[in-house]
Image (cartoon, rainbow, N blue to C red; front, side, top):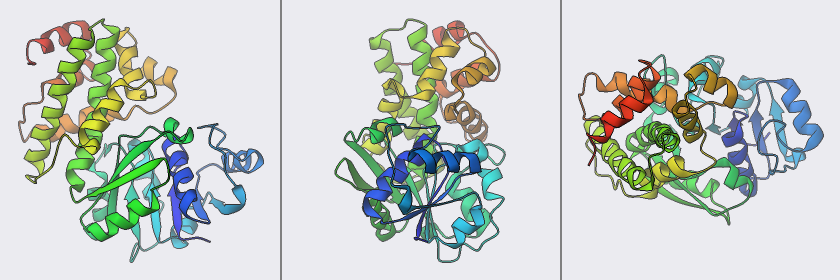
Length: 328
């Protein structure tokens, strides 16, 4: 079996597998359900996601046994929705000694209220050099269509970051590297919250003028919060931060924007989740950032507004109207 593994079976995991297979002869792939693997092998594509992405299944070693995949791999790309990371990783019984995990998770661990790299470091006794993150802007659907996309790879060890960047670079995917793991992770969490806000405002008939103000204030919130957590130098205007916020807030492929649109139209949280049948990471991220900020008291009016609507069941119409008085 080859040395690179994909952990997860959703659209982002599928897109990342497509990228990696451009550079690797074979990959290992953990998919939880055997029926999904069987359908994948029969059709040459993921039965549930990204039908445009075709795969040479002879180059993929599938397994429903995550420990088999971990044992056979040196580098693992974790692409599982944040609410399921704890449950999935709890099944791993293998040592992570000498292994690298690249997390593509766009959220925090809800029960632990931790970013994913911190959680993995604690759970598996891994060093910062063994952990990397993938930041956008990048939608899985555009990877499937091979549209030009950009990724930022963060790792405390820039040599490791470059190795991961090389693994993920293709003719249609450009990569750059960064040491700002914490900033990239928190930005990846928070941009989903702002995409929900953008979707709500669209449904509530706020125009492009206000949307631009909303996103300008959103990037300031990310800057303030990231600095409060880790006072490092970071270019918040770079594509891994601002670019990711923009594409998640404006793209038709953004599930968080779609979720926000439904809430703005009057759907309850539960009804919106059921109709989408996909995870909107920003819903969980809103609570995580809200809890984390209870001790830091960073000025985050947009996050506060989303928490009031999603968790305190306040009226989107009223909360957004009040929010307009707090932005500039």
